[in-house]
Length: 89
Image (tube, rainbow, N blue to C red; front, side, top):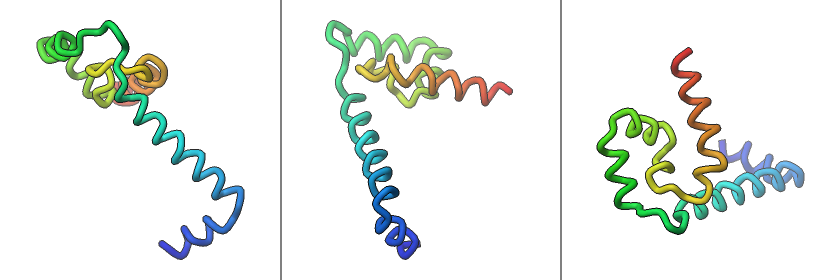
């Protein structure tokens, strides 16, 4: 396995694509920890814990709805809807 990864790393185009994907993942995880200003996170967390359906939706979104970060309104709704539709089909 390491031999294949080393071979892939030696190809410039593959290396650039891998670095881009890793960079986007790091950027997304950093932005996922920045909450939106003006949102009471304690009240939002309690709201999701009190409602079972919303708690399940938060579980499918990976917890981004509970933290209500900057990227929660960008990528998370698309990912959550695709997971829900694939589970229900």
